[in-house]
Length: 475
Image (cartoon, rainbow, N blue to C red):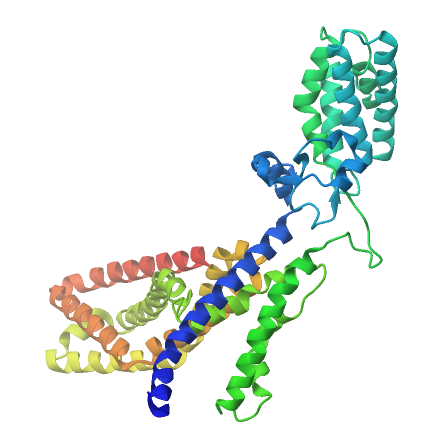
């Protein structure tokens, strides 16, 4: 194969290779975005559930998602000897710098030791009382020092105290703990039965507590940046490779225009140490890249939003225009009377009405409707913004806002084109002509004209008022 044939073969393969690379890029970008979302929401409290996403993962994930036990963990906590996983921690906790809080960890270990002593026939009363005294002292320490505060888990401590008060009937939290960890029956429950209740209702709340070191930058320890850097390196390689290819291919008149046109790539290239929100902004370049490669509809969300609000736009325009036309018809009937209109020759009368309608339609297009366009556009913007309010305050808010701005521009352009078009004016004129023609045919002799005028004016007033009330109720 000669060089020309090889060159032609390469040119035919380039589009396919480019498409494959774009698929790989979008896959990596999606994985990076998913990981950033997982990291950003890991410790976020879920409204109304009184627990964080980590708490849900800790309760729901299988055993294989727990943190593997290392020799260093065994040296720090000998109870982990011979265990494959630490059931109290998740695999992701080391990345967030999460460790078991020493106070709650020791507290739960003493509860476990007490349970073991009670099941051991060879244990002595002195050993049991020693552990009970230690638990009473630790309970006072927990109530006074609140070890849950650093993890923003003070609500867990309040729930623990409330449950202990409810179980013992003691209004004092310290008194409730002291009574609970005694060798006497409490509310008819023996000590082993109370430990079983504790393991079901109190221990899970204590296990949610954790500890994170504070770094020199004043932020809690977080090692996600070390993991995220591989995505940043990939994005840097992609960005500079495309920049070089655009310069060599002559796609841009100036070399510095590439970063200007691809400004959204800054969210991929700048690696913040602790800002999870900044990483979530990667959704913007991700969506733009997907649209550039036609992996998403090029029109995005705009057509769906416009389609959903088309009825609102049409109803608003029709109502305002109809009020204006009916108001003019009422004034014409009230001032001239149906008698004078009926005495005119049929041809002259229709010519007069046609001229009046054309004049009114032109006046509406030039003076009335342009003023209504801003009000209608504001109404549509308010309707769309209200519907998308929850997304605007979510981590995806900037991306949604960018799409909405594009939708608003398309709505304004479509509304202006519909108002200024001659087809709309012609249809409105035809409707009015048919209405007046039917009205003229229904007019009888002169004795009924006055009564008909009164009824018609009342009907027009009622219709106009109803239309105005409907428009006010929609705004």
